[in-house]
Length: 58
Ligand SMILES: [Zn+2]
Image (cartoon, rainbow, N blue to C red; front, side):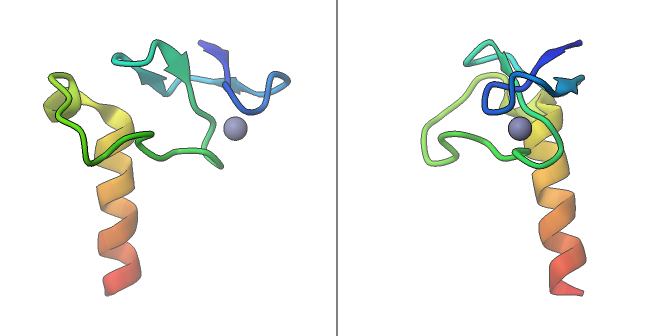
């Protein structure tokens, strides 16, 4: 657990391994999706972001 990088008062479990910061559910988005990230395949932030897109599409 850690504090969201945009919301220092919000605790989050979503950790970006590349940037070493946490993102709350409100900020749950990859900071640089265009750039290669070796952590992406196992990144929960990227995974949930994709899930969200699928939901929106349907
Ligand atoms: Zn936040």
